[in-house]
Image (cartoon, rainbow, N blue to C red; front, side, top):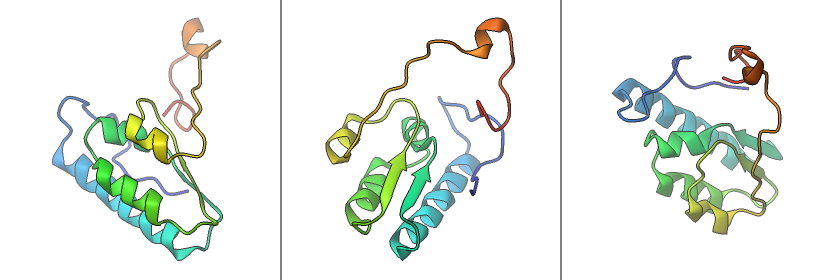
Length: 114
């Protein structure tokens, strides 16, 4: 597991350049690992959020999906997936909140909600 980011929240309306650079570095690292073929499964956790916040460019993620080795399962998570990714995906799943600790006043927890 490798995390790229400053560990805080990113302003969706205007991310800082440092956030953009860290996201780019994360995608570059993911690209190297995916293309190495060493792993059967690679998860790009919250990459859809990074796309919606304009931290990453859609065409770069699309290129990774198209060029990955055939034996590598690439999982992209996060809200707001661009519809362009639906056509490339083998699976598209939406989670629906039925029950959540937030409703009882439990604050978000590191490693769980963020």
